[in-house]
Length: 85
Length: 85
Image (cartoon, rainbow over all chains, first blue to last red; front, side, top):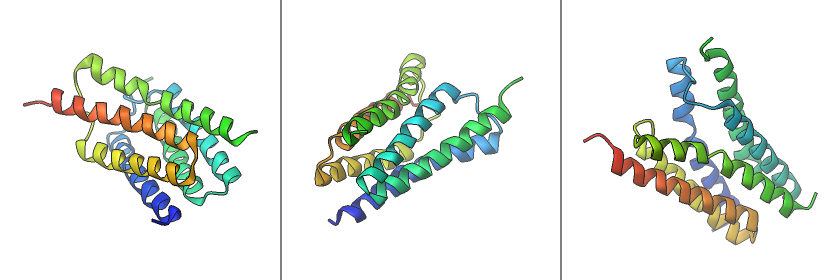
């Protein structure tokens, strides 16, 4: 299989798997089950993967990790908005 | 920065961010917040990333996604063990 097609399919699957949690948090206006420390660790790691994708010039890596950064930044924002005072 | 070092650091960060959920599920013997459909989608996507890593011959991709497959397979097993009858 062409490695770009493989990477895109892999990226779509791992991206799709993040959507339900995002919907759940936004719908229930509750992000207590998330840890902001872990979100920051995850966002740092994903951002490094984007950087890695640019160095290796691999579009599937860049696209899927950029999407993951976006989803997790939104989750982090939700955490700050919805956290219990 | 050497791309392998960058990939390893990125992989360690994204791997570390998965551990708390695994610990929580095992400790509380409760995996109700997980969806087995999403775990299957995620495991499929991560497995394709491992395959992609082998095609591109990139060790950071292979290692971090193999670890993620392992964690999510354990979560899937926990889901089946701990689900409400």
